[in-house]
Image (tube, rainbow, N blue to C red):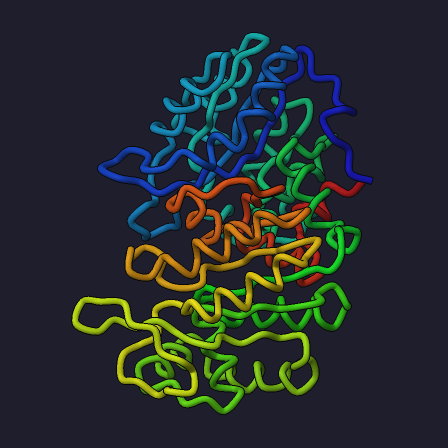
Length: 394
């Protein structure tokens, strides 16, 4: 059973709260604070309940351009939350432990990027993770652990799976809601339609296979590079440019898509037309008129109309991945139209990651649930277990 904040006596308790505020950066500051705002409810509730909160988080990957300190994140959290949020440039050092011990009730401190320490960038079994320096030293000044970092729940790293080995542990409000929605898709209104697009061809094919095999999907609508892979599998010659993009993503994608078409072709929908760029203009090309030299950048209006008809009759719409290169105004049409159609379903779920970024960029709202996680959401949709969730299940 996973305990939630409803089971936690927070008043006066020193809590380690793992969040996922890994965000785009610009000129040393935050370019987007969406992930910080996602955790406001959890953190505000704990501060309002007079907890002493030590916030744990990561930013970027070692060697990456966005691998940085969390000082800017602390400043923004201090603005977003009613209670004060300090910053400490250590995570489990004596200074970090002293900063946690010095907190008054209703105060928080954001500890330094957990990935500054090599332990955190390795995968561990839960018991071994509980013995790492990060967990063993920091848990000594904590009374309990709260995991609100659903977006990182597919990782088996010390700050995610180690603390539940040492401390009473609870799911934060983000984690609780994600598990409630994504973990109970089988109970959502029928018929269910999955809209799979974007560039993560392997992940999307895995999702399609899982939901079709388990009878969760009444229809799978393909678009983006995913749709192109299915068109190739169906014997459509796209043109060298589009085929190369698919093959660069996965040499097995076309074969895997073909196997799914053989088994579930009656439930898988393929694009009817694509949009390309010609002389700086958007041009739509019917699938029957392919191949073309230019790469497919979006689905066309015939595809949108056909997919919108399916979505109109859907009880639940689950989105993962944009329909095309939505960042370019010439090719945002397919993504915008399909997302707006999906939002009108009785229940509409967005799988996070690039999909959520597309929603924000295009200003589309009205969904029942927008996941904070990309990889974690995909794993839940394919029925895989999440290490950080398993660690909470005591």
